Amino acid sequence: MQYWLFKTEPDAFSIDDLAKMPNQTEHWDGIRNYQARNFLRDQIKLGDQVFIYHSSCKEVGIVGLAEVVKEGYPDHTQFNPETKYFDPKSTQDNPRWYMVDIKFKQKFETLLPLKTIKQMANISEIGLVKKGGRLSVMPVTEHEFEILLKETS
Image 1 (tube, rainbow, N blue to C red):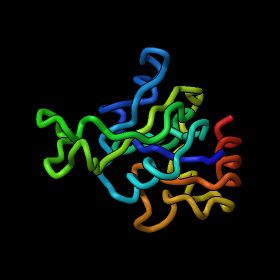
Image 2 (cartoon, one colour; image 1 turned 120 degrees about the vertical axis):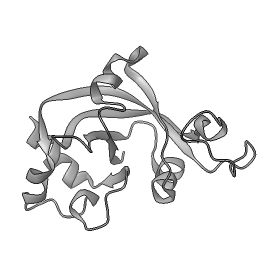
Image 3 (spheres, rainbow, N blue to C red; image 1 turned 180 degrees about the horizontal axis):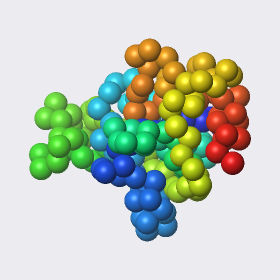
Image 4 (tube, rainbow, N blue to C red; image 1 turned 45 degrees about the vertical axis):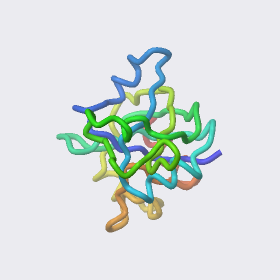
């Protein structure tokens, strides 16, 4: 099992939105960064655990937990010219962008703020604390996952 952090803007799609989806499951679409795409396509696997992180809002931080229930497959929004994620260079035979499906597991009682994460002595590898490392999909080491998860309880 691997561990991940997925960033989302809560006014676009929040942990509460995920919890309200049918079967509390939704595809994670719209990723348009090649490194994050490679994680979705090649490394994220069924059963992997995912922190949901709210960004670009008043209170940024880790808000909950989800689980990967479907491994990487082509993001359908890249083929639809009516979406903001349309990519005219992407084809059905050679898709550029991928997504996974995740299922809601838990919303934390309190948000774990970014400023707290940055001050944690044992947290040094996660992209949130590295300069230039803030992808919308990023790996989390098992050690850091356990530390962060413990901080949320």
